[in-house]
Amino acid sequence: MELLERFTAGDLDAFETLFRQHQAQVYRWVLRILRDPAAAEDLTVEAFWRAYRAHARFHAEGNWSAWVRRIATNASLDYLKRRRPETELPEDVKAVPSPDGAVQEETRCKIRQALSELPPRLRIVAVLALVEEEPYGRIAEALGISEGAVKLRLFRGVRLLRKKLHRMGVRP
Amino acid sequence: MNEEDLKQMGKRLRNALGPLKNAELERDLWPEMVRKLDQTTVHVPWFDWVLLAGLGVALWFFPALLPALLYHI
Image 1 (cartoon, chains in turn cyan, orange):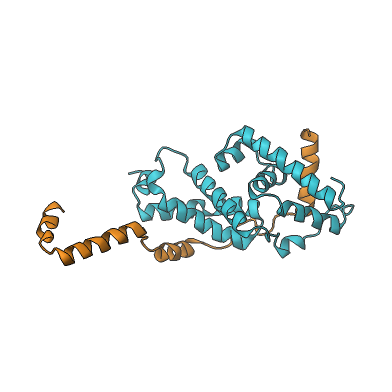
Image 2 (tube, chains in turn green, cyan; image 1 turned 120 degrees about the vertical axis):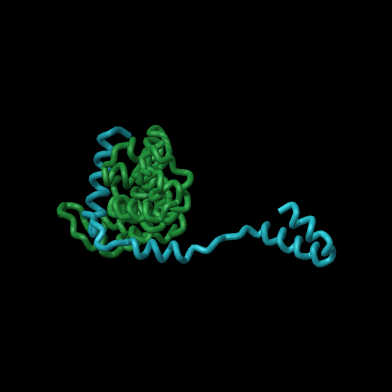
């Protein structure tokens, strides 16, 4: 029996094989959304746990990688919703000096704050589309929405971000 | 808002966030996964407990129902 078929049947060995094959990829994906290594590790495990619980709903001929990425994206979204409004970027990220000396640290701090204050579903799209430069199609697939909805969320996210920056005295 | 505005905003965000650190997974997470799977208890919905309690009460007062129940099981 094929690996995915065995997984769908609830075979733990098949799950372990899939876990070992995909854990690094899922971790990277979550890390790019949250930029927090500790949370990314926790959510990688959470995403695979959700995948294992839902094994019967996966179709063996489907794309396992895309499926588990969507689960990981939803787990990240849940995490951001739970953590709001105190969610801030981790200290080690804040400490990274920018290669562009023209932008002051205070301004960068305000931009990070404005981004962290965005509603989670807008924030995820903004980070993936603008920071990580992921194609709209891939973001849509990961969120289980249409490309049009991704563009709409991006538009709303950027508009909100500009408003917040304007209020903070940063030229948007 | 056009593509150029989005590019500009992306540039500012990347600049503010800085490069991604710890981009690669440095340890195997399978032991964590096993721990989480082991901790997962079977969740019985409250409604099932109510049914079970009702059945217990019924059998307490009407023990003659037991053979009929066993027959139907």
